[in-house]
Length: 161
Image (cartoon, rainbow, N blue to C red; front, side):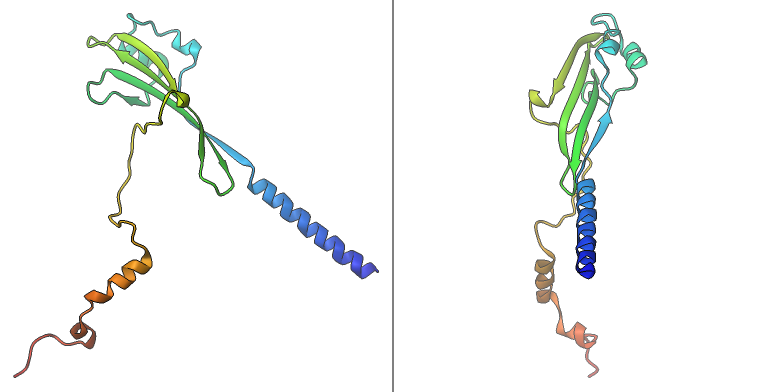
């Protein structure tokens, strides 16, 4: 009877340890990226009075600037949640756009979130690999047609006659 109780206890201990590891591994991980000024910080920026330099001085450098005409500052912050081995899910994104007139004075301040439209990548740095949906097996089988029998046999291609 003592032997059966010992096996049961060992099994229960292993099951409890496995459950604890699974619960720990699947707990959500929240990550925060970027910076968006708070309403109190933004109140120090006056439309029609503040300049590009004063905005950068009061709020810090922007996450990104307008590329074509250089007339906007963008402050972007995001919150992501990752659970276990699954891909991260973006829970919140906030974009603060400060637009300037041609003379460099604040013209407009706008705040956007995920609910305002589609997610736009401000900077996309992806290198294409040049392989278009070809699996390893497809590449391997595709190379058989390019094998030259002379190369395999070690022939140089010339004749001695």
